[in-house]
Amino acid sequence: MSADSPPPPNPVALENEYVLVSRDRALYAQGSNPGSGDRVVVAMGDLALTSGGAARQLARGQFAVFEQGQSYALPAGAAFFEVAIKPGHPPVKVPAELIPPAKNLLLHDGPRFFIYEEKLEPGDIRPRHSHCQRVEIRLNNGPMLDQWFDPPRPPLQPGIVNWREPVIHTVRNVGDMPLRNLIIEFKPETT
Amino acid sequence: MSQARAAAMAIAAIFALNSSAWAQATPGDKPDPVAFDNEYFHVTRDAAPCGDAAVAGCEDRVVVAMGKIIVSSGKSQKRLAKGQVAVFRQGQSYKVAGAPFFEVAIKPGHPPVKSPPEIIPPAKNAIIYDGPRFFVYHEQLAVGDTRPRHSHSQRLEIRLNIGPLLDQWFDPPAKPLLPSTVNFRQPSIHTTKNVGDMPLKNLIVEFKPEPK
Image (cartoon, rainbow over all chains, first blue to last red; front, side):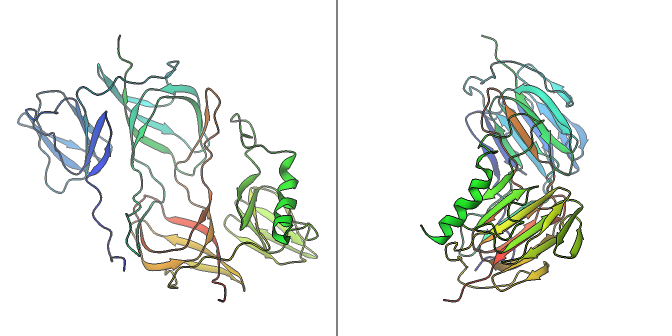
């Protein structure tokens, strides 16, 4: 028989050769930890983050970026994603043409990746544009069902964190809610 | 040729001239008129090829309004708003004025309906039609709410609340990624929770279990 409450969500929200995204836990909070290279903490609710003796308040969708050697701490029970970019990941894949997407909001511009809020109103079109590989964290979701089954099988958990491959495309929001995603996108590597 | 196969081919032939698998090539083009097709259902978007009851394969049908439309049948006329339906049985014809809408045609002679081993009615939904072979309801669940353990037979789901949803066109051209507003669901026994940020609201056409 299925349980009365859902099983706890998987603490690993996404993992591949490029990133490890953890849910509500900070595996790479210590800068001395092997593997603690570039990291982004994305708040999914209000939280207070501390780093280097300073406290910083983050609201849902806000984030903090840390480079190699930097440490941070998060309070117990906080809702967040820790995006750890794996040092020594494979070469970044890029599209055949680099065309900046219109209508988004750039929030961080670093040497190896940039972070932006991907936005698009219902009915609106984003003209032809391109992306490199990227992590997508959905901030607006619409109705979304978490399901657990009888007889038991792996729960069907909604994909809030997604990995996207390079693409050149045109998009239109045919939904009934503004698109709002936080995107961490790799920059093309210099050869 | 079986009656079911002949019916399916008759419906498919209606669209053979005007549709292709990659019909939506640019944002300006109209979407594919076939929203969904399998052995049980043929669902068309903003077209009513089964409005004439004399067309082979057009028996049980449900017109689902996705906006304000007028459905007329005989001397009666029905104004429908988004999410409202009109149900027609064998021999009944109709016309639809306006858009958007879906026409759901249940294929006569479809394979046996698959049902779960236990029938547990889902709570919190609203039945809007109850017929001998299928029923139609609004599947609804508020944000954060849980629907206790329940079951479903095979069913067609039309999403009324969607959230953000991207239609995409690729370069170089690839099969368009059409958002899944219309879905077919297999039988299940499950518990569900709306972990999104918008109330769940779907229109469901669900088969009733067939007598064994």
